[in-house]
Image (cartoon, rainbow, N blue to C red; front, side, top):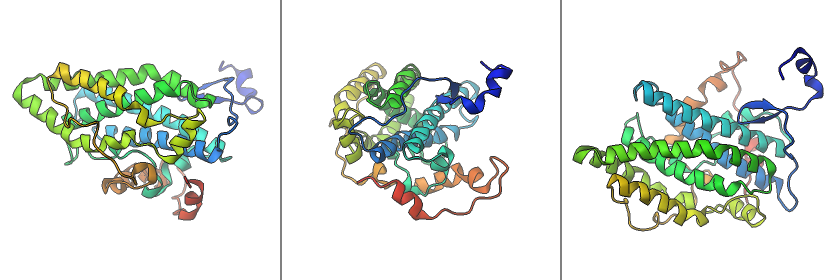
Length: 310
C-alpha cells in the first residue's frame, strides 16, 4: 500500500518487480541447484534482448500506422519492455550486479544476444512495410508464446512467474498479428501479394528460432530453460492455421529451413543492428534520459567477460 507508513518503511522492505509493478513478492530469488549462474544470467539476457530490440523496432512506426494501430503497436512494445525489465533485472541479480539499465543500453552490437528476426528492418524504413512488420510479429509472437508456455514450469521461480504472468498478453499479441495477416491475405490479389512478400522477407530468419544455443541446451537439461528445437511442430501448426484462414501459402514447405551458427545468440548480427543500437542508445549514452553527464565509452572487456557463454 502506498501509505506514508509503507513509504517510510522502504529501506526495511525489499520490493520485487514483476512486469514493472512494485509488489511485495514471495518469489524465491535463489539460483536452483545444478544451475550455473552464468548460464542463467545469459539466458535471461537472451530473452530480454529479444524483447528489448523488437520493442524498439515496433516504436519506430510512431504514428505512421494510424491512430488505432499505432496505439496497438505501442502497447505491444510496452509489454515487451516490461518483460525485458524483469529479465535484465534477474540477469544482473544472478551476477551480483545492480544496474539493469547498464545491461540494456550500454553494450556493443556483438554483446547483444537477441535472435536476428527481432532486429531486421521490417518497416517503416526501406527494409519493409506494414505487411512485413505484421509477418515478423506473427512469427515472433507465435514462437515466444510457445517458449513461455514451456517456461512456466522453469525451476527458476522468477522465470516461471514471469512466463505465467505473460501468457495472456503474448496470446493477445499473437492474435493481433494473426488478424492482420488474415485481413491482408484475404483482401484480394493486392493484399495477398503484399502479405506473401512480407512473409518471404522474414522467413529465412525463422530457422534460428529453433536452433538451441549451448546455454539453452544445458539449462534445458536441468529444467531451467526451453530447448527451442522442441517447438518446431507446435509453432508450425499454429502458423499453418493462420495461413490456411488467410489463404496464404507457407513461404517454404520445409520446417523453417536450415540454420548454421553463429547467429544472434552468439553475438553475430545483421548490418542493421549497429544502426538500431545507435538510435536506441542515444539518450542513455548522451546522459539525457536522467539528466546525467554524458557517459564515457565502456571497456569492451568488462562485458565480454560477463557475457561469456561457453
